[in-house]
Image (cartoon, rainbow, N blue to C red; front, side):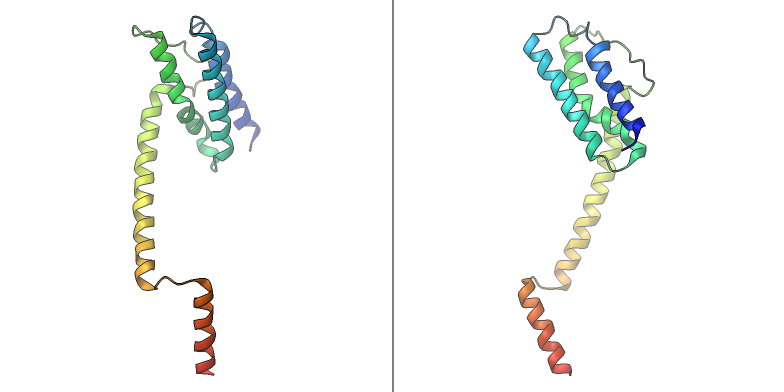
Length: 143
């Protein structure tokens, strides 16, 4: 994990905890604390599970998007939360990111199902022990 990734996580948490503090000031205290704790947990987990370093900001935004939606719902009346000071914190782009990820995932799921089906057709299902016995027997016959 790079230092820049941790800085991005810190910026996202600062946005929810500091920049949006005035937007959630009238929210029930327990609900506010729960939402902020969930943002911290989900964003940290997303960062730790991210394998590619070039998409960490997308992963962080996607993880925090439901809580941004909850914040917008709390504000109501078409009001939006304050803008972030970091250029990459733009939740309006999350829908595009998630749509692209879903398309990629569905393509990967289809190709993995196709290859596993082919594998099942090519060889019958048997335990490791049975397969080993068969290989040993066939080796003895050919010798």
